[in-house]
Length: 360
Ligand SMILES: Cc1ncc(COP(=O)(O)O)c(C=O)c1O
Image (cartoon, rainbow, N blue to C red; front, side, top):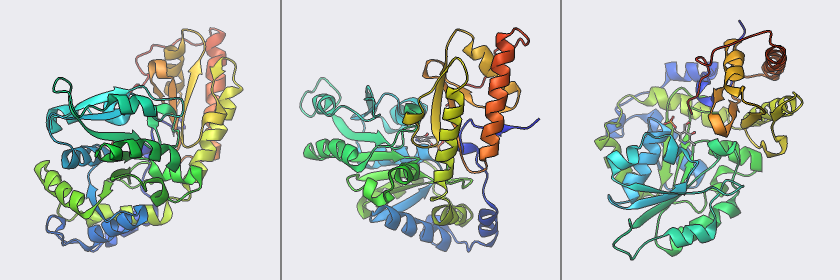
């Protein structure tokens, strides 16, 4: 059976060039700062994002966690969007490990936060409410359909943070998707951020790793926290080598993933019963809604036929394009979706819901 895996860009496989780079990487003890390939990746990442320093970490979750641990004391709270990965997808680790609470605000239609609401949510005086310690936005925004925030939108929230002497963090797991969509360089997008995490292992297709960027001082602090978390690695050049290839050769091609998402959205829109808004599909993520009550059964049926995506209930069906997914795969996926929906509606197939994947 032909499989088209549209569950996530975390499913992307490393390119042949990455595999070569991994095999040939010059290595050392990264924990001691002696791995030349890690050092090169960190310097590249910092330069690319216009920050003083960077640290390679194991995952986006560890990058976000470390950004918080390095800048926000226990007992404080972080203002975030309700639909962010930090709020919904990181297992509550910030509460259990960093000892911070999350103050989650409704995302606006652009996916950002309402400036007045952010300002009125900051608490620096009352002893009864958690003291605000940080503000964070996500870019692009996974559960907001991959919407990209531009520098102006980010600056509004960053300015509020800085006016209150609070650090501003960007979870830029897919920052380069935002930059490619907006036609700007990534450093321009994070100009006002104190720290930024971006992932090497999503659209950029490296097998492992994320990078946290910030000032020399914050990243020095982050190194200590990563050590506490057991995340300080040794010959991590084998990870960094793929990350270097990712930064050098996988950024511009993200435009292909965006085109494929657009192709999918346009195709789904023409299938009876689907609600998709191609105009709001900016990057590589799209959500589709199906009229009626049989969505979960249909999702299972389509997944069983090899078109993999997540059924996220009320949020809709989430499809994500990435390296390795071609326009022909999208056409095939559309064919299978169209046929399955038609056969299901005609009562020609029955399915159980047990196979519909529903993770983030
Ligand atoms: C927006 C966002 N931030 C952070 C993460 C966490 O990345 P990781 O899975 O590498 O921990 C994800 C993962 O999907 C994500 O979508």
